[in-house]
Amino acid sequence: MAKINVNQAADIRAVMGAPGTGKSHYTKAEIARSKRVLIWDLEDEYEGFASVKLADLPQLMHKIGKGAFKFRFVPSTDEARRKIEFDLFCRIAMAVGNLLIVAEELRFVTLPSKAPAGWAGVTLRGRKRGVKVIGTSQRPASIDKDFLGSATIIRCGALNYPEDRKAVAVVMGISPEDIANLTGHQALLWTLTPRKVVKIS
Image (cartoon, rainbow, N blue to C red):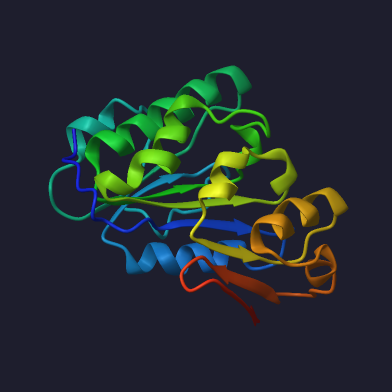
């Protein structure tokens, strides 16, 4: 188990937006800058960004050392099994510590009313173990509120549904119309410290 350090700063990034709004581009740039990364690769799209693709989660504990690594796990297409895998994936990240965990399309593994135990651990307690987080979603109204509420950075591109715009706008302290007016790769970048919103493209 990773050692606890209460002085570590939280780094929890919510990357929200409809398809084609730059979520993957942003996420891949962050992966490239990181030395220790675990990727929940739902669409099997991170081959060029992670050196090892894992088919069996228990392999992680045997492969991860104290140095640099970039591993990705492509989960099952079976919903019940995928949720079990995600919980174990998150628990492994917490046990290893001092890494970046990337979770693609959270709506497939979380619910608005409940965060799975492993994921809740990552988002609510991971800071003390040096766990940095990037979570992405096209449908932020369909993911757990703990994650959005814990975010230190939100990158929000255009969102098609009013419910999704509202869910993110509440946390960012802006109007849903600010999100509705985004086009292409435009995005709003919100930071908790200092608390501000800037428009990027």
